[in-house]
Length: 388
Image (cartoon, rainbow, N blue to C red; front, side):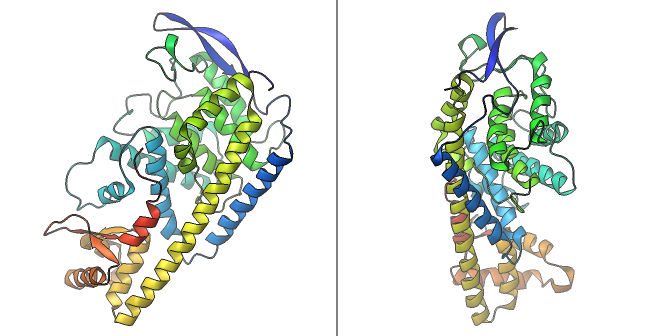
């Protein structure tokens, strides 16, 4: 091992004098020299991403998948932080007709969806991946609900820590607040390929660890750090569409993940982290590719069945359900274009037909304002999103 990847400094927090860790700028020194196994994993990861990205070009409407996949990522990433809500609960909340007030968990996940979509929209506009954008995304993430009082959209001006009830018993103490901007400035240069270019997957892997090590916010660091991975891959044009997220892999390997983050800091275990990261890319990309293929087959088979039954309005509703897998009749009417919008009763009858065909199921049990789920599609999307 190359030893610690930073230096310790003393800082005062809560009446205690504690040692805080200040990481050295990226890239690591001495440089990472991967063995044959690491090189092979890197190649496999790039190929797996290429296959997934190539598949998105064949989709009739990629927005169908983006709507659902972004929400799946929001659920998974939030679950790593301790939320207990499911994808179905989030989709139910997004229907205006859904009964009851949303839980704190659902508000948190909904904020994550908005933050992710804000960041991706800014990147599509040509805005650089920068500290300013990271702060914007954080501001959206903590716009309401839990954590909204913790300097939303601002880098911290006080000391934080990870694990333990106070800094003196913490598992890890990030840089003091007066060193945060210095560390972030060096990270921003690395994101912009200064002092020299870094292969995108390696850059995403290293940048994620560095961001988590700096821990620049009072709350939301883990979620922003995971968003940074996909944002970087889209920014560097490795992904044309944001369909790859590592949160499922990190959720399933949570103890290993946290352990490796700390071992990079204390031992310089960059090679082990890269192997873990590349394996996550490979498994996640392969799972996503398989899921997209299964969904495409499901859509095609259901479309053929609906066409054979002669249900023209049911076909319209089926198309909506491909993008919004949980819908009420009222919301379906709002989503349909004016020129092809049928009457309420006609759409209601279409949902009844889809229920009879076993394609959708009613989720609320209510007599009015019922909400329907595209059950097999939702089942595919929900794989791995069971609360921890």
